[in-house]
Image 1 (spheres, rainbow, N blue to C red):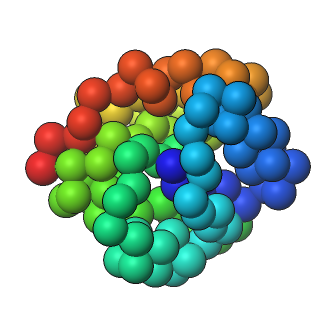
Image 2: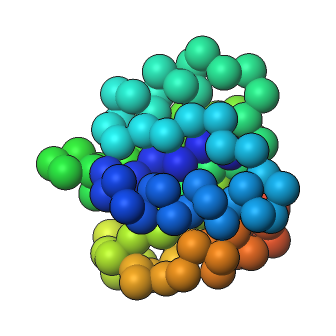
Length: 115
């Protein structure tokens, strides 16, 4: 599990919720560059949770990298679905505030992202 989120407390809560669901968090990233480095350097990523806005960066290059590998992901964000590019129309969108256990349940139900 890869968590891409720039709010530390939310990341910590989500990591704990995923651990309770028997999902191992293999990476925490607070920027697009960090997330892309984790994706590039980690052969086995089962899924990811992405915040759309990471300080001043939009997360869509990370979503593209995940989709290219067929890794399921969802957006957990305060942004409205309207900012999500059409290529990610089928990706689950959880609007903040959302409980970490709800994000975990939504992610477990998310199918693999088409390449």
